[in-house]
Length: 97
Image (tube, rainbow, N blue to C red; front, side, top):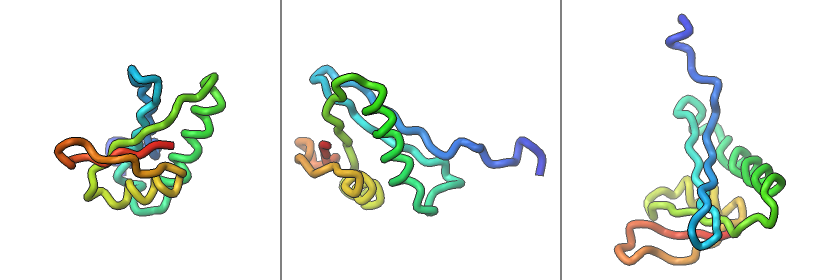
């Protein structure tokens, strides 16, 4: 296997997008090579801890998840997010922490 075939050493990306209402929308995307290994929760919790340590007066955290994405729902709720409602069309569930 040459370098072009080697899996990326990047495990995940976790974003915190500040919104106009003063909250921060959280999203996580795991490298496909690392999915299904039970890493998402620890990556999410570590990213949240870093964000809260580095941002003064940490804003409320939110997440928008498709109802069919049970893995993401499970990960976010295990990290302390609670269901707060759906959008008008029911396409997305909203969670807060």
